[in-house]
Image 1 (cartoon, rainbow, N blue to C red):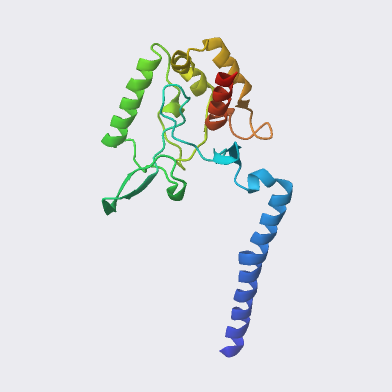
Image 2: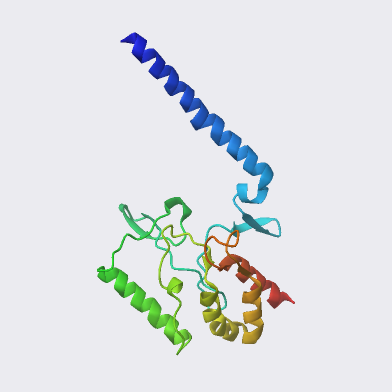
Length: 201
Protein backbone atom coordinates (compact mmCIF):
# COMPACT_ATOMS: atom_id res chain seq x y z
CA UNK A 1 0.00 0.00 0.00
CA UNK A 2 2.85 2.38 0.86
CA UNK A 3 4.29 1.76 -2.61
CA UNK A 4 1.09 3.11 -4.12
CA UNK A 5 0.61 5.96 -1.64
CA UNK A 6 4.10 7.44 -1.94
CA UNK A 7 3.97 8.18 -5.73
CA UNK A 8 0.49 9.64 -5.33
CA UNK A 9 1.66 12.01 -2.57
CA UNK A 10 4.79 13.00 -4.51
CA UNK A 11 2.68 13.70 -7.60
CA UNK A 12 0.19 15.73 -5.52
CA UNK A 13 2.96 17.88 -4.01
CA UNK A 14 4.70 18.34 -7.38
CA UNK A 15 1.53 19.32 -9.25
CA UNK A 16 0.47 21.63 -6.43
CA UNK A 17 3.86 23.39 -6.59
CA UNK A 18 3.78 23.68 -10.39
CA UNK A 19 0.13 24.56 -11.01
CA UNK A 20 -0.60 26.33 -7.72
CA UNK A 21 2.60 28.32 -7.26
CA UNK A 22 5.09 28.32 -10.13
CA UNK A 23 2.61 28.77 -13.01
CA UNK A 24 0.56 31.61 -11.39
CA UNK A 25 3.74 33.45 -10.38
CA UNK A 26 5.20 33.08 -13.87
CA UNK A 27 2.00 34.31 -15.57
CA UNK A 28 1.71 37.24 -13.15
CA UNK A 29 5.33 38.21 -13.84
CA UNK A 30 4.93 37.94 -17.62
CA UNK A 31 1.67 39.93 -17.53
CA UNK A 32 3.36 42.61 -15.43
CA UNK A 33 6.07 43.01 -18.07
CA UNK A 34 3.91 42.82 -21.20
CA UNK A 35 0.75 44.57 -19.91
CA UNK A 36 1.80 46.52 -16.80
CA UNK A 37 -1.32 48.73 -16.56
CA UNK A 38 -3.75 45.85 -17.07
CA UNK A 39 -1.85 43.56 -14.70
CA UNK A 40 -2.11 46.26 -12.03
CA UNK A 41 -5.90 46.39 -12.42
CA UNK A 42 -6.25 49.10 -15.11
CA UNK A 43 -6.36 51.70 -12.35
CA UNK A 44 -7.28 55.26 -13.31
CA UNK A 45 -5.65 58.12 -11.41
CA UNK A 46 -6.45 61.80 -11.14
CA UNK A 47 -4.08 64.17 -9.34
CA UNK A 48 -2.21 61.21 -7.83
CA UNK A 49 -5.36 59.58 -6.43
CA UNK A 50 -6.86 56.34 -7.72
CA UNK A 51 -10.47 57.09 -8.64
CA UNK A 52 -11.44 53.78 -10.21
CA UNK A 53 -10.61 51.01 -12.61
CA UNK A 54 -11.32 50.69 -16.29
CA UNK A 55 -12.47 47.12 -15.54
CA UNK A 56 -15.08 47.79 -12.84
CA UNK A 57 -18.13 50.00 -13.23
CA UNK A 58 -19.15 52.75 -10.85
CA UNK A 59 -22.58 53.94 -9.77
CA UNK A 60 -23.06 57.31 -11.47
CA UNK A 61 -26.52 58.61 -10.54
CA UNK A 62 -26.46 62.35 -11.22
CA UNK A 63 -28.28 63.72 -14.27
CA UNK A 64 -25.04 65.42 -15.35
CA UNK A 65 -23.20 62.11 -15.86
CA UNK A 66 -23.61 59.13 -18.17
CA UNK A 67 -24.92 56.09 -16.31
CA UNK A 68 -23.71 52.51 -16.65
CA UNK A 69 -25.67 49.27 -16.71
CA UNK A 70 -27.71 48.40 -13.63
CA UNK A 71 -25.77 46.28 -11.16
CA UNK A 72 -27.25 43.42 -9.13
CA UNK A 73 -24.37 43.03 -6.66
CA UNK A 74 -25.12 43.09 -2.95
CA UNK A 75 -23.39 43.42 0.42
CA UNK A 76 -24.20 42.25 3.94
CA UNK A 77 -26.91 44.29 5.65
CA UNK A 78 -25.21 46.26 8.48
CA UNK A 79 -28.35 45.86 10.58
CA UNK A 80 -28.74 42.10 10.00
CA UNK A 81 -25.79 40.00 8.82
CA UNK A 82 -28.14 37.25 7.62
CA UNK A 83 -29.57 39.56 4.93
CA UNK A 84 -28.14 41.49 2.02
CA UNK A 85 -28.72 44.98 0.66
CA UNK A 86 -28.09 46.34 -2.84
CA UNK A 87 -24.48 47.50 -3.30
CA UNK A 88 -23.98 48.40 -6.98
CA UNK A 89 -20.62 47.41 -8.50
CA UNK A 90 -19.46 45.63 -5.33
CA UNK A 91 -16.36 43.87 -6.63
CA UNK A 92 -16.14 41.77 -3.45
CA UNK A 93 -19.45 40.12 -4.31
CA UNK A 94 -19.54 39.90 -8.10
CA UNK A 95 -22.73 38.19 -9.25
CA UNK A 96 -25.93 38.46 -11.21
CA UNK A 97 -29.33 38.64 -9.54
CA UNK A 98 -30.38 35.05 -10.41
CA UNK A 99 -33.92 36.38 -10.97
CA UNK A 100 -35.70 34.56 -13.79
CA UNK A 101 -38.17 35.79 -16.42
CA UNK A 102 -41.14 34.99 -14.15
CA UNK A 103 -39.78 37.05 -11.24
CA UNK A 104 -42.19 39.81 -10.18
CA UNK A 105 -39.33 41.71 -8.52
CA UNK A 106 -37.30 41.69 -11.75
CA UNK A 107 -40.29 42.75 -13.85
CA UNK A 108 -41.07 45.59 -11.44
CA UNK A 109 -37.45 46.82 -11.42
CA UNK A 110 -37.16 46.73 -15.21
CA UNK A 111 -40.51 48.50 -15.64
CA UNK A 112 -39.43 51.23 -13.21
CA UNK A 113 -36.14 51.72 -15.06
CA UNK A 114 -37.95 51.78 -18.42
CA UNK A 115 -40.43 54.38 -17.22
CA UNK A 116 -37.62 56.60 -15.92
CA UNK A 117 -35.61 56.32 -19.13
CA UNK A 118 -38.63 56.93 -21.36
CA UNK A 119 -39.40 60.08 -19.39
CA UNK A 120 -35.79 61.26 -19.90
CA UNK A 121 -35.84 60.73 -23.65
CA UNK A 122 -39.44 60.42 -24.90
CA UNK A 123 -40.09 58.69 -28.19
CA UNK A 124 -36.70 56.96 -28.36
CA UNK A 125 -36.26 53.18 -27.98
CA UNK A 126 -34.46 52.32 -24.74
CA UNK A 127 -31.24 50.32 -25.31
CA UNK A 128 -31.49 46.94 -23.58
CA UNK A 129 -28.25 47.32 -21.64
CA UNK A 130 -29.67 50.29 -19.71
CA UNK A 131 -32.29 48.06 -18.06
CA UNK A 132 -30.52 44.69 -17.80
CA UNK A 133 -27.72 43.71 -15.45
CA UNK A 134 -24.61 41.84 -16.54
CA UNK A 135 -23.64 38.42 -15.20
CA UNK A 136 -20.88 39.91 -13.07
CA UNK A 137 -22.68 43.07 -11.96
CA UNK A 138 -19.43 44.95 -12.59
CA UNK A 139 -19.64 45.80 -16.30
CA UNK A 140 -17.77 49.10 -16.87
CA UNK A 141 -19.02 49.55 -20.43
CA UNK A 142 -22.25 50.37 -22.21
CA UNK A 143 -23.17 50.13 -25.88
CA UNK A 144 -22.73 53.21 -28.07
CA UNK A 145 -26.54 53.32 -28.42
CA UNK A 146 -26.89 53.48 -24.63
CA UNK A 147 -24.43 56.38 -24.47
CA UNK A 148 -26.12 58.28 -27.30
CA UNK A 149 -29.51 57.72 -25.65
CA UNK A 150 -28.31 59.62 -22.56
CA UNK A 151 -26.95 62.61 -24.48
CA UNK A 152 -30.12 64.79 -24.20
CA UNK A 153 -30.27 64.37 -20.39
CA UNK A 154 -26.57 65.12 -19.87
CA UNK A 155 -26.65 68.02 -22.35
CA UNK A 156 -29.58 69.60 -20.52
CA UNK A 157 -28.00 69.10 -17.08
CA UNK A 158 -24.67 70.58 -18.18
CA UNK A 159 -26.00 73.15 -20.64
CA UNK A 160 -23.80 71.71 -23.41
CA UNK A 161 -24.93 71.38 -27.05
CA UNK A 162 -26.03 67.83 -27.84
CA UNK A 163 -23.85 67.61 -30.95
CA UNK A 164 -20.72 68.25 -28.86
CA UNK A 165 -21.69 65.43 -26.52
CA UNK A 166 -22.39 63.08 -29.43
CA UNK A 167 -18.91 63.84 -30.76
CA UNK A 168 -17.48 63.11 -27.30
CA UNK A 169 -19.26 59.74 -27.21
CA UNK A 170 -18.14 58.89 -30.75
CA UNK A 171 -14.51 59.62 -29.82
CA UNK A 172 -14.75 57.19 -26.86
CA UNK A 173 -16.18 54.19 -28.73
CA UNK A 174 -13.90 51.16 -28.51
CA UNK A 175 -14.19 48.60 -31.31
CA UNK A 176 -14.31 44.83 -31.05
CA UNK A 177 -11.25 43.25 -29.43
CA UNK A 178 -8.91 42.08 -32.21
CA UNK A 179 -11.63 43.19 -34.60
CA UNK A 180 -13.81 40.14 -33.93
CA UNK A 181 -14.42 39.63 -30.19
CA UNK A 182 -17.26 41.30 -28.34
CA UNK A 183 -19.22 44.36 -29.42
CA UNK A 184 -18.36 48.05 -29.77
CA UNK A 185 -18.53 49.68 -26.35
CA UNK A 186 -18.00 52.86 -24.37
CA UNK A 187 -16.26 52.87 -20.98
CA UNK A 188 -18.54 54.92 -18.71
CA UNK A 189 -15.81 56.13 -16.32
CA UNK A 190 -13.55 57.24 -19.18
CA UNK A 191 -16.49 59.01 -20.85
CA UNK A 192 -17.44 60.84 -17.65
CA UNK A 193 -13.85 61.89 -17.03
CA UNK A 194 -13.70 63.28 -20.57
CA UNK A 195 -16.99 65.07 -19.84
CA UNK A 196 -15.49 66.70 -16.75
CA UNK A 197 -12.40 67.69 -18.74
CA UNK A 198 -14.64 69.32 -21.35
CA UNK A 199 -16.31 71.38 -18.63
CA UNK A 200 -12.92 72.70 -17.43
CA UNK A 201 -12.01 74.12 -20.84
